[in-house]
Image (cartoon, rainbow, N blue to C red; front, top):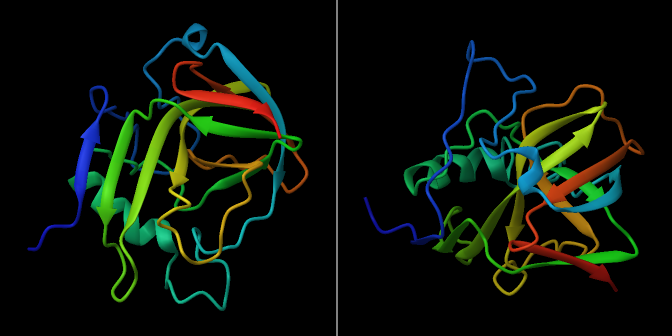
Amino acid sequence: MGMIGRVSLKSPVARYRCLDGKRRPLRLSPLPESEFDSHVAGVLSSGHGHASGRNPESPYIGGTLNLQYPIFKRLGLDLGECYPGTLNISITPFTYQIIEPEHEFLDIAWFPGRQAENFCFCRCLVFASGRPLGGYLYHPDPATKVTHPDNPSHLQIVSPYIPSLVIGSPVDVGFRSQDVIVSMR
């Protein structure tokens, strides 16, 4: 098998708990809630539909995340308990900047004929339906993502499936301030 990319791990790989193999809300993050000292309020919004495969015009059968998850797992980040789609959370008028990603994957050639991309992941807590749920901020590097650019005021979160969320639902996200900075545009 050929080289699929380079990896930069800033901390130990997270391990996930799976009770019965089904996708359901689980607390993925082994970090205590107090570690997440920065919070931003947002609203669940629509994305491009490519990550989940819900866009019928997408060339990525099954979604980009179904194609990327096995690669991330081989490189040390197992997202198997996460829904194969993103929570797109609008934090307008704020934007975010990743300072210190927990996982950074460089030059990932995840789809034939497509330019290799860089990806960063930072742990987060999603506060929806009254309880925190561990997940990751998923950040394809805009410098290497040549198609369907992302809105800099939208967080893309991968987490277990949260059945109570619908477009327009309020969602708060917690980060570690050493990993992510949220600021006004």
